[in-house]
Amino acid sequence: MHELTCPACGSPSQYNFRDFVMMCPFCSASFRLDIETGRKELFGDHYIIPNTIDPVRLKEHVTEWLKRLHHKPGLAEKEFVILDIRGTSIPFWIVSLEIHTVWKGVIQRSKRATDAKLGADYLTESGTFRRAYRWAVNARSNICENWGMARLHEPKEPVNVVWDGFPLDSTYSRGRLTPEAEGEKSAYERREFFEFKYANGLPILGCQIQEDEALRRAKTHVEWYHYNIAQMHADYLMDCRHEFDIAGMQLIHMPFWHATYAYRPANFLRHFYRTVEKHVIIEGINGGILKGELGIIHRDKVQINAVVTGGAAILFFLLGAVWTPMFFLVALFFGVVSGLSAYTAMIKLEERKRHVNHVTPAASNAKMKAQDL
Ligand SMILES: [Zn+2]
Image (cartoon, rainbow, N blue to C red; front, side, top):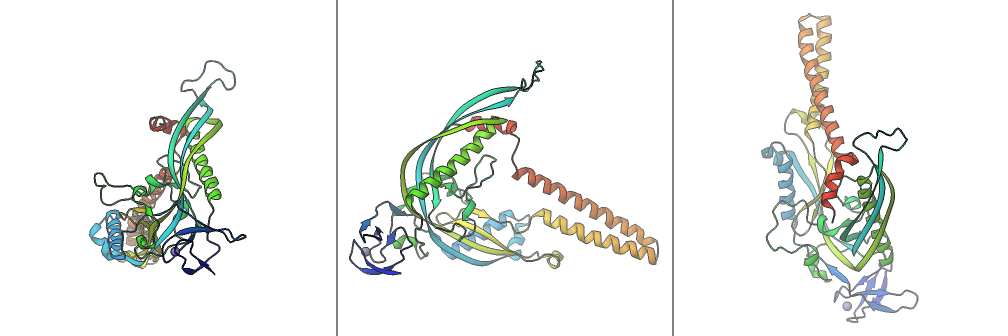
């Protein structure tokens, strides 16, 4: 920490030189410091989205969300315990950009070609699409210091997200429990020039990433995203190019809340279930659930059932062997129940896998074309 005087109000204060933008605790002015020359420069493109959530409201939101997921909503309050609630105002570089993607590839014909030549079944196709984003890049040097922030982007296309940036508008508006009111302002439109008071009690984290790095990362993320989209158009993508139009960059502090909770079944299953901490991440305007780990899913219960009845089947089989053959019938009954449970759990797992993994290019093609701008 080093002492500096604020270029706006002249008050001395302690600053961390690791921060790219200094924030005066007295007048909320943002400025940059050239460490070599000591020159200070006021930084105007710094905003904050006011936090409007408090721990009590947050708890209500998380409980409501858990109730909606629970197959017996009445039990949710008994079975879930909220362990910890924490809010933070995190800096993001918001890059307003437009990207134009041009692709070329080959697609398999639906009818087999009569020509026996290799490759005759394939046709060359090409296309373009253009999209605009306000792309958010975390301005902290460690993107994993807050749970769930490293993979916040949930695209509507079935692509595997391997980048940490996300489109601000579609991300910060999802997971809401209350419908959007008419004429309601978006998160971006709610931003104010940076002032500490808008955090409403949340700790404000410093900006540690420079503008040029954030811009480079935003471009890379969007390129990867668009490359994945282009890949869905063709069976074999051969070429994919992007052109960017950068409209501007702003530093915006955004309010996030993080809650941890634990699940404990209310019935006999509690003896077989290990309590694990689960996480939920919530935006600080409307309390939308941006990311949440599920406590227990139906499949888990079925799986536990399979193990318990399987154990009973073995026990009664042994009893049948040493005592009376009557028990073989009971063992058979438990064996059948266990087998059915295991089968159901397996089917559910497969369903989930199919849901998470990519769908075939051909199936998503028609859908993608409709979405293009
Ligand atoms: Zn000041």
